[in-house]
View (cartoon, rainbow, N blue to C red):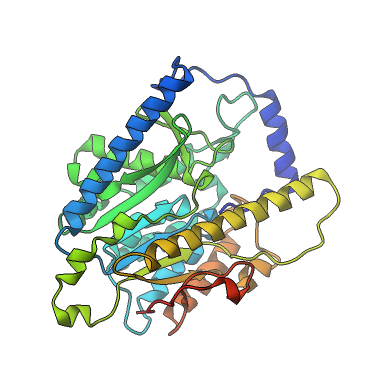
Length: 395
């Protein structure tokens, strides 16, 4: 979920949009197709991606069931919370498990590689990015006249290349060979589809081309449309998947019941497997007196809309986990209200180092605590009567 811009920055972007030039023609495979043919092509593309995802998951979990799944949400600079939480979780009672599957959207996609690898050096990389980065390390403002965005993400491209090295990708490939899976999502503007990228499989394919594609997917995953330029992949324009889902989980990522039933009785006696969700942001904005005026009303409405999207995506993931056979426990954590009620709560893409340090520290303290998780189906609007599913385990 993205924080909203200040009124001044919002006004600048409206001005820049008004004077931007027309975009150059793309190489999209949909170019020139009538709607009926375009829909048919999109359907074939979606089916091919679904088959690839299914084959990747079956290869990993045909004879075993995943035990621990991690889902990372979007949240731009508030990735500091999730990064700190992962660090603290290492010191929590029972420690932090290795995850069989990791998924990420937007800032969660940028975090996902290092959460997936899970070593102390990976925690250090996350800390460096989410406490030592400022806005200039992510984007630069460009003059009106840009074809596809009002900001340039060349600095973010360089930041990704600095941390997602060939060695990091080789380590991801090694974990893929051990049956673990890493997925991030982008949104294909041309096809109007969420695209789930099998990053661990991509890493296992190896080579410079693979490394460049891996980095391109990560850049696209964090490219907020209009603000950041889309990334062209296979001819289509890809942007931040938060346009459709701010976090994601699919039933196939949880394995199949037969594999779970085939496990040794002692293993099954340890209890159900668990889905863990880290929400990089709060779930309920504080009430406030909204100033009169179209900008303030519009920004507040958009903020609450994206908050609602996040909550419903979280509930959807809970349904996937709790209704699976076998049922998974569902544990989630979000930023405490106190972090979002503070005066320095920030605005979208501010990358305020003072706030990120504070949020990282709060996440680390919460991650190390004995009982940081909320369990079961997240309630709507704080009403416990809307939480009807059985609670999951917290270990």
